[in-house]
Amino acid sequence: MKTTYKCVITVNSPLHIGCDEVYEPMGFVLDEEQKQLIAFDPVSFINSLSPADKSTLSSLCCLGDLPSILRIYKFFQGRKAQGRRVSVAPAFINHYRSTLKIPENKIQQELNKFVIERTAFRTADNRPFIPGSSIKGALRTGYLNHVCGGKNMRERDAKALEKKLLDYQSIEQDPFGHVKVSDFQPAGEIQTRIVYAVNKKKKVSEKEARGPYQILEVIEPGAAFIGEITVGQPAPESPVREPVELKALLSGTHDFYAKEHKRENRELRAVGIPAENYVQKDTLLMRMGRHSGAESVTIAGNRNIMIKKGPKKDYLDHATTLWLTSPSRKDKNIKELQPFGWSGISRLDADLETRLSERENVYAALKAQEEKEQLAEAQLQIQKAAEAQKMMEEKAAREAAEAAEREKKQKELEAMSPQDRELAEIFDENSVNENKVVDLYKRIDEMEDDFKIKSAEKIKAFYISENKWNVNKKKKKQFAKVQHLKSILGES
Image (cartoon, rainbow, N blue to C red):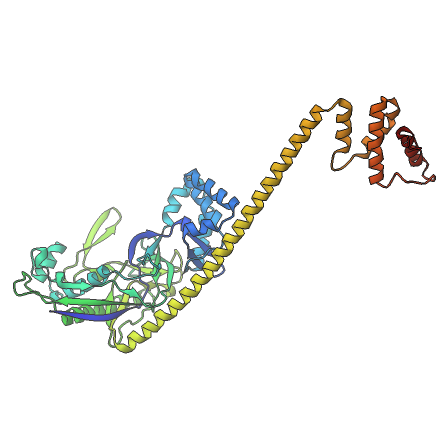
């Protein structure tokens, strides 16, 4: 027999679920005006580039050195692209700009810092989801604390402590083997944001915490995810000694995280950071994901949290710092800092299911419209590319024909007599140089009869084209030239 709890997880504070994926420089551009990172499909983006841009990008990629990565960043800067949009803060845009100006001797160090870690996402549509393993881990921590009740079990090894609390020795005896948690799927559009994770001391101090910042994509508060938590009842012959009950699992989890929430809020207020109350009626409180805090992933009364003090290490029952989201690398405005990972679990009743279905339908309609527009844009780009290709081919054909014509003329010139070649070079060009015609006319009386007549015919044709053949006697010089040419041609 098993009991299934259909439920909704609503994100209360920024949530990051690691997935070992990052936003690559070859996979995003920044829309600085809208303050958004646009993650696109590289193949589609490259197909939209002009042949010249494709060639430039290909050359950059072939370099294969560190400076070329920055050149690729610069190549993408300011370009338009279609894809998933993620909000960014102005400080991130400034950070991106400064990254483009890194000196070559610091590229390795600075690029290692400019890594944007993605939250877990579905490959089908790039929407975030919450893996069942993350939820189950949070439930297990909550239940272990419920069973322990804050007692010191005098067991330093974490695995041994879990076995002691749940009364098992082998995996087959672990009662959580009968707890199944589905992946929780997004309901509608899920907004995400790029933030900095910064380390803040729990006590006011002149020296800040040393933890280096991280750049993370987080799911924004208000996002909803639907899934199931199922608790099976072990068979009579099962080796499980202390089976988990759904009611105890949920209530125990809520009680533990509610206490941790109160503790953290006291610590936040102590250093001037605003603290929100995430406890809500008919909703179970839970915490998961990156930077949930050492206390939220350990068992009260048995904590052994490592604290680094320079080269030395110390072990305490509490953490001395908090990891918080910040819109910038430095936590200058503590009013903008937020804790990670707080969420609420509520039953998926008929009314809530209807509202979330409507949210999903709105998302589906918007995506269908986006895909339609993107298809139209892609077809337009294909058409433009085809037209550009056609123009290039026509240009190449014209150039080839012109080259063939030049080669033909050159061969014809080479086969001519010196006199015929001279006439061809003067008169067979697209634009006749009149000075050369005048020079030819001056030498006409010195020519042999055959060449003299050919020259006269060519000069006559040129004068006719220039309206200089049928002239009156007032234009004495030109009239005299025409009469002389007529006499040579036997027309006078």
